[in-house]
Length: 219
Image (tube, rainbow, N blue to C red; front, top):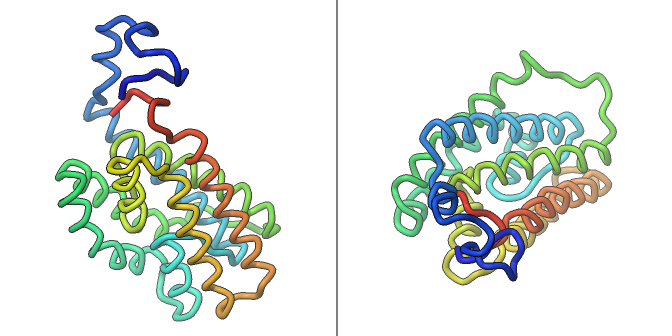
C-alpha cells in the first residue's frame, strides 16, 4: 500500500521509514491473538443470530439454513462447507492465509459448538440481535481480514477480488450475503428474514468503512 489512513497523504510523508517498515508485518503472536479474538467475537455474533432465529450470509448463512432445516449443529456443518474453498485460498492467496483460515474456521466451529455452556439469552429482540450481532460479527471479520485471514467460503472470494481487481471486500460480501439471506424465505418467517438482511448490512458496513485499500498498513 502506498497511502496512509488519509487517502491523499503518502505514507512516506506521514510516518518515518522505520515505522512504516514495522507496520507492514504482524508478529506470530499478534496473528495468534487476532485469530482467537476475532473468532471469539464472531462466535458471540453467531449466538445473537441463533438466539433470535436469524440468519447471516456466506457459508455461515448456508450453515444456519442447514441447522434450522435439519437440526445438525452449526459448527460441524460450517466446517464441512468451507473445505472446498481452501483450494481457492491456497491457489490465490497463499499457504499462510490458508493455514490461518483453516485454524480460524476450526476455532469458530469449536466455539459455536461449546458456546451454549457459557452463553444463553433469556430474551432477545430480533431487530436488536440483527444490529448488535451484525456489528460484533463484522468487527470480528475485520480483525481476521487485517491479519490476512478469513473464515473461508465467500470471504476468500471477496478478499481475492479486492486484491486482484480493487473491488471492496465489504461490498462484494454484502451482495453475496443479502442474496443468501433472501433465499431463506422458504425456511423462516419473512420478518426474521428482514431482520437477517439488516444484520448482514450491519456486518458489512463495518467492513466497507474500515477494510479499504490505503486505510491500514499492517499485513
